[in-house]
Length: 209
Image 1 (cartoon, rainbow, N blue to C red):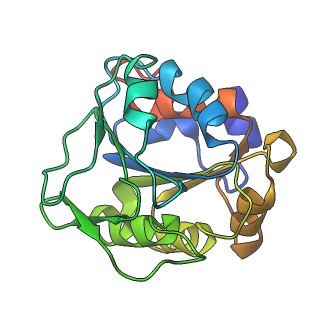
Image 2 (image 1 turned 45 degrees about the vertical axis):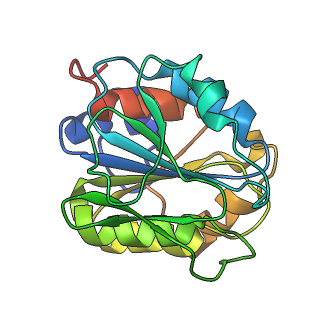
């Protein structure tokens, strides 16, 4: 039996997800650069889902995330642009001080609506909008962070039939965010970062490994 199947909490088989997931939404906050430096470089060139990331950042400073991760990743890395069609196999970061959403198309959308949990961009806003568009073809990943942003959005992804993943709280620099998502309802996979990367490869790479 695959080790990922052993630690699935809801009976979801990792191998059964291969080819089903069209997009992955990911939320991260405190400790995020270190966590993403483990996760993103582990994704192969044939990874097909789009990966949409909200990381909490200071709203009054430019983001360096594109420069940091372009050097680390084989996948193209971009800052999300308003009305841009979502491209498979591309990593998109929400820009500072804008909510990132998914609209029909699917296309990206940026919003300057009020902050959520003092955060703009908000993980909940991205996850809820993506759940409406992708339904059961969406996976949501919640990583290290120090507040409850993402818990409501993770529940929305689950209710839409998507797959939910949380970093094992004991391995997170800040455990509050994965703990809040876990407390909100059953999470399909609760994994350390290296196994989150492995799960994404199983779901999204052409080879399924």
